[in-house]
Amino acid sequence: MHGADPHQVTDHPEMGAIRFVLMRGGTSKAPFLRGEDLPPPGAERDRFILGLFGSPDPRQIDGLGGADLLTSKLAIIDPPSRDDADLDYTFAQVSITEPVVDYDINCGNISAAVGAYAVDEGLVPITEPATTVRIHNTNTGKVIVAHVPVVAGRAAVKGDLVIDGVPGSGAPIALDYSDTAGGVTGSLLPTGTSRDLLETAIGPVDVTIVDLANLSVFFPADAVGMTGTERPGDVTAEHLVAVEAIKDAAAKVVGIDGDGLIPVPVAVAPPIPYRTIAGVEVTGADVCARVIGGRPSTLHKAYPGTVSATTAVAAGLAGSVVAEAMGGARPGRIRIGHPSGIMEASASVDTTRGIVEEATYLRTARRLAEGVAYVVGWKTPPGS
Image (cartoon, rainbow, N blue to C red):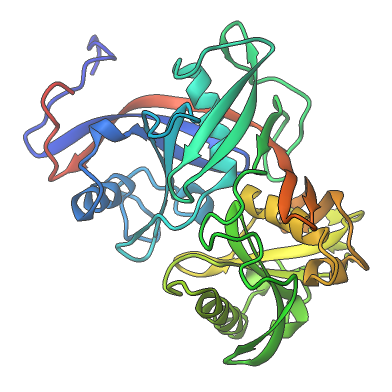
């Protein structure tokens, strides 16, 4: 309203108000909320989040959702619940088509934005030219370390790092996932090996299951009739059914509920030239990879940051399906070909001790907006 105090929350008898910051992290974006401003975890909180996003609705027209898997995401920030972290971060994947909010998965792109948010909000001691942010991701129970470039006390925005799928360039934020192994199953390799022959509803399939950053199951693209170079419109209902069969079988073998978003299914193939969703020809990848999942299940338009770290780990394991697609195990930096272009990640594993020494990648992030959102049927907490 003209002349109103922009920091004053306008009351409304039929809607509750909540402050938010909209952040982009890598190829994703999400509203950031403080946990203290939300209902406690549970059904009431989920109903509020669905109302905030305008879900379920394929357009999410009556909320803040962006009507895409990569933009129907939420970050909830709380004070740290453990001594080795600066803050708690809970990631929520908000379904577009179902009244469901999933918490069994983390987003690596949004994790980068958490680092920038923490600096801008003064949640960590600021040092220049870079500030280290120790992020306790409650979804996995593990600590991610973000190294955030800082200019004049704020998270740097300008820089030379180009992210395929994001216009322009930005300041690089380094994410380290080396301490996240076994977040779901307690082990980097839940089955004890780098390769398994998995019995699935579509027959036996060679897979590699890695529990780091996000529990993931890698399989040859041709096992589900794919080439590994698909764009979203190329994925058929038959492909989705086959991928779901592998995901379900992998969930069963590691002892988790297959109804969630993990293990993340990843189809891999040898590197061959292909065109991105923007029509740009891609060459020079070390491996082609496609992530399929979500609600509804679909081909991701870009590569998840968490899965890039997991892919890099798998690439260095002799006998893994990722290493096979690359023509042999290759620790260190790899280039992953995905629908929006190339993503780089680096990893090193001490296989004799089963310790991940490095699992890193770079993202850019920045603050897009801040303001007040209104949710129908919810009462603003006193003092907000």
